[in-house]
Image (cartoon, rainbow, N blue to C red; front, top):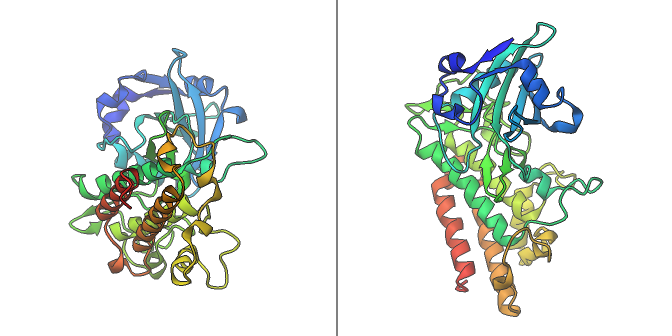
Amino acid sequence: MTCCYARKHKKLGLPAKVLENVPTRLSYLELMKATDDFSSENLIGVGSYGSVYRGVLGDGKTLVAIKVLNLVQRGAFKAFVAECEALRSIRHRNLVKILTTCSSVDLRGNEFRAIVFDFMPNGSLESWLHPDTDRNLYSKRLGLLRRLDIAIDVAAAVSYLHDHCETPIIHCDLKPSNVLLDGNMTARVGDFGLARFLSNGTDRYLSSSVAMKGSIGYMAPEYGMGRQVSTHADVYSYGVLLLELFTGRRPTDDMFKDGLTLQKHVEGAFTKGARVTGIADPSLFSDEEEGEDTSVLRTGSQASERITRCLESVLMVGLCCAKESPRERITIKDAVTRIETIKSLLLTAKM
């Protein structure tokens, strides 16, 4: 039952340095102990291929997130391999860090697969944008500057995957639930279970069907037409995420029906001459913004105009990313530059 990481990490291609802060040999029983027998109290997320638990390793000081694969689910093992492969050699401040993996058997002799990550104490972006009011998880809200930082963080992570890896990586499932926030509220992209590699411009793991490469609402429309995985598709997903980040509306919201989409909802604010503040997430203007010095934005009518111009600009970036046609979308590198400029202009009062 022992998960011999020192031995197995070579097979999975995981560099030894990721094991520095985690014991090199862990058993299924130790993971079970770390999560209090995988208790519901330690369950922090459920995805397509498994569940994520909060865990405390033996020394009592190392808090980790343990993703346990549901191997009964079709595609779960492939997702496990894909995630390990994608994360084996990439390092970026805006990507969730994999610490190690576990390939073993449980107490019943069934195959057991788990991935151990750095723990992200501030949860997912999804939880902040759409808090569970019954549990009141977050008493504060994300302010404008914080959202701009998150937008830049996510775009920087995707730019790294597309433009700075030896072999470009396509995430294939960008959405708020796959963006996690660390103790400093820095955004980190995670969940690479659907990730694909591009080699000489082609998808190394491309199957005959790519229709399910992503999540409804965030998945690029060309996937539904059987087109290949590409960086353009990640840009589309990022654009939808960006629109959601500043409007507070999911692309799957009940209001979007009969041809109305999140993109058209935002476009309407421009074409009909309405102020974009009318479609912006109301909590953007909350007095309880998490960890931000917002005094720079509160200087009367000029500040209001700067905020409006900022929202117009960033929503336009989202629309440029989420174009229907892949060729009409801007690159993720361009998106990073534009949003950084928007933030800079907001802070220097030149908008």
